[in-house]
Structure formats: structure tokens, C-alpha cells
Image 1 (cartoon, rainbow, N blue to C red):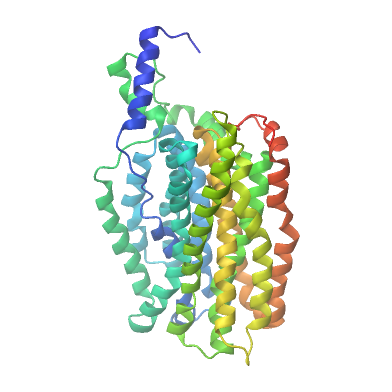
Image 2: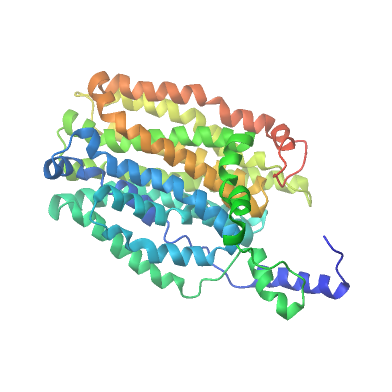
Length: 453
């Protein structure tokens, strides 16, 4: 890097202060839209079978292809945001929300999920750029947690729409909500510091690099940007550990999206509306997670931060909620497995679902905060894209065999099988907490240097 004059250094500082002080907002394309979209069609399973004459597994495909698209979208969206900035991509995906009008259902769902997906990765990078680490917990929690309201609210809204208006209105509702979010573009500003500095270069006379010409450097762009999430998923131990654990938890959550209506309709004779209302327990779990994360931040993380003073706080201290959640998840699955039966009130498995969602979200949100604190701002979006690819990729597969698994094994052993999977991966957050510092030393991309806890 060439040396800069004092005038240039002053200009660089002013640009940094401008980016810090400029009024910004965390905007995630209304994060509930993509997450509601993935689950809103789960109550339409029977109607899809009747109208299109397909089997149970094929009727799950609209759920699976949307989930797969949510995983694939950020792999392109996150890295592109690091090249062109955050705002152009967000504007583009809103324009592409009209993909929900395609006549073929599965293609429609894939395109809709793919166009919505980048917001899930871009949001984490935005939080990293706007807030300092000591002030990042609350906005990161809200931003990361909000999409999880979708899997809870989606089936509730979907069951009401399917019962009274038909399954097609689940798609019209998403289109209307996506159109409304166009209003949020007013006042939305760029947050990526490189893009901000490039735009301010004329005012401060800074010798900044020009915008990469993607078409003439397609190979370099693909190698350094588009494939970075996949490379991090394979070569970065921290990302691999987190993604595998979070992906399993997410896949089980999506299995429940397919299994819960089946269980409550057959065991407790619930209708479509009632079985959709069961997912409100996930919403309650989201609010419990918010309280848990705030308490962990105030009572644990901030106390640790005080002891480190001006030094960078090791990101492992973000993992306290993950440690709690890793123990809670298998307990709640076994609870659901052996309480969802005739003779036991339906409130017991509902409570188990709520606490499973609470434990699962404790793991996911704190893991995402760990990624944001560990990696430099320029690769945070790619790390979150790798996370999205892993969790939605696995989540797309699990529902395809969930119905058969519950039909052949029964509620008790099918749910217990999922519980055994979570027991096997339960040590992952503990390994990261205890050995994360050593794993960070192995990385060439991490921001936090070797520090003793």
C-alpha cells in the first residue's frame, strides 16, 4: 500500500468519521418476508396434493426448493455486496420480488427464495459496519432473530389463508408484503465503508481503487468473491463447526414444519387452522431468546468487556447462549417425542416445541454474533453466506423424508432420532468456546488475534 500524506490521512479519517456519524438504519428488506415465505405454504400440503394430483413427498417440494434457494442466494448476494456495496443489491432484490408471479409453482418458489435470500447475508455485514463491538449485541440480536419469526408466523398466516381463501393466496400475500417494503428504500443509505470511501474520494482527493470491472475479470471475481463462502465452509474450521451445528438445528426445525401438522392432526384431531396456530410457540420462543441474549450480554459479556478495557474482547464470550441452547435442544426433542400422544394434553408438546425453538435460536443468534465479531467486515457477509448455504441446504433436504419417517417410525422414535442427532453434535459449541482461540490462529481471515481467555 502506498504511503499517504497527512492531508490524505486526514481525509481518510474524515471519511471514516462521516461513515460512523452519518444517519444509517439497519434494513433487512423486512427480514420476516423471506422467512415467512419459506413456511407459509406448509399448511397447504393437502390442497397441493388434491389440486395437482401429487404424492406427499412431491407436495413438500415447494417448501424444499424455497429453502434451497435461500441457501444459494446469499452465496452470490453476500460477496457481490462486498464488491458493489449493500444498497444496489437490496434495491435489485426488491425489484426481483415479482418472481412470485411465475406460473410454475416450484420454479416460482425457487426464484422467489433466491431473490429474497441476499438480505439474510447483507444484514450481518451492515450491523458489523454500523455498530462498534460493545454496542453491537442488541441490534445484532434483533436483526438476526427477526427472520426466525417467519417460521412461526408463516404457518399461522398460511393456515388461515389456506382454510378461507386457498393456497394461492399464500403467494399473493408475499407479493403484497414485498411491494410494501419498497417504501423502506426511502432514506436507506450505503454502509459498506469501501463504497462510501470511493464515493467520497473526489471530495477528499484520496487515491482509491476504481470499481472492479466484473465482466472483464470474471474469473478473478468468481475465485475471490463468489467462491469465498464455499471455501470458508470447507477450509475455515470456525465456519465449518458453526455451520454444521446450526445447519442440523435448522434442518430439524424445518422437519418440524412438516411433521407438526401431521402429528397434531392425527394424534389430537386438529384441523388445518388449529395445527397452524401450534407454530405460535416458535414466536414465543423468539421473544424468550431475546430476553436470554440480553441478559447474557448484560450480565456476562459486558462484564468480561470491562476486564479487557481497550483490548479486543475474545469473541468466544458471545457463545454463552449457545452453551445453554446446546443442552436444551436434545432435552426438548425427547420431551416432544414422548409427550405427543393420546392421554397427554396437547399443551405439553406445544411447550416442548417452544423451548426447542428457544434453544435452537440461542445457538444460532450467538453463533452469528460470534462470526460477526471474529471476521473482518469485508468477509462477514461471505461467512454468513456460507452459514446460509449450509443451514438452508440441509433444511431443504430434511422435509423430503420427514413424513415417511414419522409414518414408519411413529412420533416417538422419529422425534427421538432427531434428538439423538442433536446429542451427537452437542459438544460443538463447547469446543468453540474452549478452543476457539486456537482455531482463530489457524485462519488467515479472522480479525481477532491470539488472546488468552
